[in-house]
Image (spheres, rainbow, N blue to C red):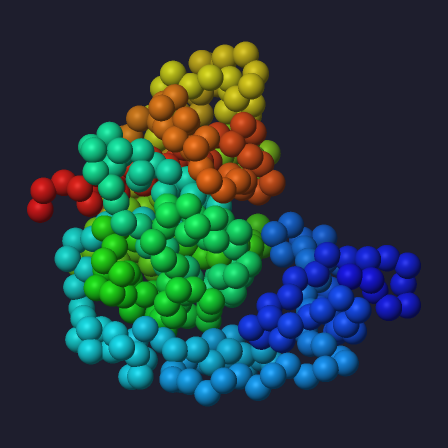
Length: 364
């Protein structure tokens, strides 16, 4: 969109459900704060309102859940757990996930990789798994912002998206992660759920100042509801920052300090992979893969028994899993790096999906 009084145009996002339809030539008010700061995921202008026309009044309907509460663009939605919901009776006394595996991840970018791993494990077993994504509100609030969710839904890789807390725009809305998980199981019939924030995590370079802290709280929620928490490690073989190389300090803090309930922690065992951890297209560097694997295993050791409360589960991350990731219907990207430039990030998420699918498909 052209910026009035300036010789430039900017990319802008419009959410018609909030501000109405915006047609060519319309005059709009834009919020450019994230754009001006050069943020990655959120680096867009956002249309706040048309200044030349008012949006139509929303149609009357059921529901009284207000998301993005007390902001000018707060949205009234029908919650799956709302008294007016067709599913209220199912959820009113629901209290048990019946052992459903719940993969918890720090970054939104882990979502397609976890699903790829789950589908690969299910395919090996000659089965299928029904996956539901439960989106928390640590990143983007509108699920509409996620191209990954849209692509995974369209491809049939994810059955539905449930938006929880202040997040909105999913196939179902829920008040909390707890009711979001219960809806995934009892309303949508999920075999496994994946809990992660929307796009655009927030970090400050401090021990506690990052939005992924909520991953530890999601482990607790899954456990208290009788689910089987699976803690997906945030791993990188390419991040230049020491605190994120190997297992990120985000995982160490969220799972080691915040998660008070035990979880399974799938630990990738890199085997027979091409290239190097920073370039899959380079000459094979077995030593680099071995060094990264040893670092990850050592760092994960602080989280799992006997030193930690969780259970370590070694899972092979090999060429077959890499091919499963290459088959993703959506682009794989984390912190600006794709599969070829940081394969360990996606393999670590994929092994969590593998383990969760094996749990979901195993005899009770």
